[in-house]
View 1 (cartoon, rainbow, N blue to C red):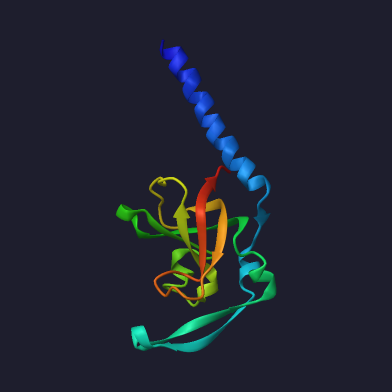
View 2: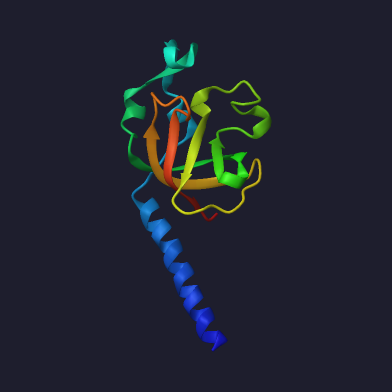
Length: 152
């Protein structure tokens, strides 16, 4: 009986992994250098009574909007209890929050399924749908929707 359950569990896990790989099969491999093709200008937001950097995405970056991508980056936990994580081009000590990196070097991860508990600076490949954000100040300029970690 236990052997049967193990066999079914292996089949289910294999199917899930193949589903992730199938999704990534049509995904474009994107680098942080690709995403750096954006200029920023100061813009005043009356609702926040402050100036913020407004992104002007290049045409090559705009072409990635709402497209499946694969990207590699460092995990930055924002709120582990609420499964809020960012993906960064750089480790925490050099990232947008603590270092001299710009807002183009970090993205919000919106997971397809609840994620495992990631550690700071885990280096992970993800696949998902890239969403460009130039209006929601509560989020980063890049959002990876339906994010799925890929096995190494």
